[in-house]
Image (cartoon, rainbow, N blue to C red; front, top):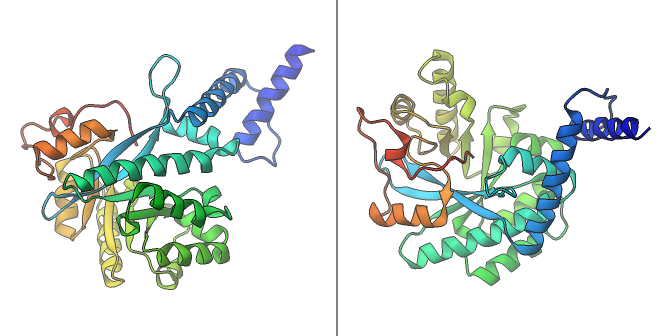
Length: 314
């Protein structure tokens, strides 16, 4: 009986991870995944209670000058053995158990404190921050953001919220109301992962967006598929016509960088010029290079030479 209950629990857990509302049959391996999720859930609660979440920073680079114009803040969580839990793994658990919003507020607070310190040291960087659907629907969202600004001294005009196309399509009235409040505070808004969802072009004219981020799936095929090159070129032209800046994410080699530069892309983000790293590593890099990125030589394309080494991916 105990074995049957355990298998039932594992299948139920798998069904919740798939979004619920469906029949899931038990398969070997489900129990291990369910046990792992319970361990991560406990670590998430502990990290929230003690403030042990770490924030890594991946630089945003201006293509024309190689100046570091901003950073994306990325949450990191250590496992019991000191290694990092893959972000997709713990974020999915945080979403399922309802901790993603509180985790986001702690992450935003820490990032605002750090960037305000960098600003006082002469590095005025834009903070790019992923906006979760749960935060968007929270009635205390604006209140919490204003409190973070008050506590940290961070200026709203240096904050840029990233939202996905799917979020825009999920509840347009709520999204429109929240976006107007956010932008009234002076916060910028970026459409993240553009091109991966149901790209409703009407949203680009209905809402005022500051930037559009081209999804890495297009960038990864830039130098191997002409179709991807045509799509990125069209996206960049369209965004510029609508007076939006363009960021390409997932740039990993010189071919992609050169193609995006020739197409007029404004900023890039990716392993080619900068991996996600802890705050102290990024500060060392900014100080050593006076706020600019180093373009690696063509005969030495090791990522270790481009930016301090880390095993963590965004």
